[in-house]
Length: 232
Image (tube, rainbow, N blue to C red; front, side):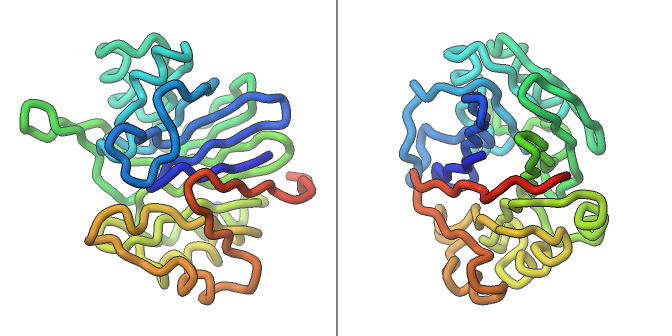
C-alpha cells in the first residue's frame, strides 16, 4: 500500500490491486494541490463537509463513477446534487467494500457547507480506519486529541496515522504527538497545516516530538510506501 499527499488533507491511497482511494478531495482552489479534476480514482472518502475537504467530491464522483463514502447527511447531499454513487455510513459503523474494509471513527469537529451564504449541516465529522492489503491506515480527519484514541490503539494494529497538526481548528503538534502515541501508530503523516495563515506549523518540529523516523513529512505529490505488511 502506498500513500500520496496532495496538499492540505487530501490523501491518495494506492492499493496493491491497482485500486485508488482519494480522501478529502479538495483540488479546486487548494494552493497546495498538485492534482487536477481528471484524477482517476475508484472511491472517494470524505471526513466532513467543510469545503476544504469535500470541495471536488461530486465532480470526481461523476467523472469516475466512484462512490462517495462518508456520513449519511453528506452522502445524501452529494447524491442529490449530482453524485452518481454513494455509500452512507455513521459513527462506529463498518463495511466491507470490494477493496477492503472501512470503519468510521469519531472526530471532534464541526461539519457544514456554505450554501447561499449560510452554513448547512452535513452530519457529524468523522475519521476512517481503512483496512486493506493486510495493513491499517487511520485517517483521523479534523479532530482534537481525545481519549477514545486509546481504544483504537488497543483494538487495531495501526500502520499509519494521518493526523492534523495545524492547531486553531484541530489539534496542534503536541496534541497530535500525544494522539500518535494513543493510537500506537508505526508511522505518522502530518496534514492540515500551512494552507492558511491561521494554521501555520513547522512539520519538522512536530517530527522531533516523536521517535526518529516515525513521522513522514510529505510535500504535495510525494508518497510513502508502507513497509512489509503486518498481520492484523
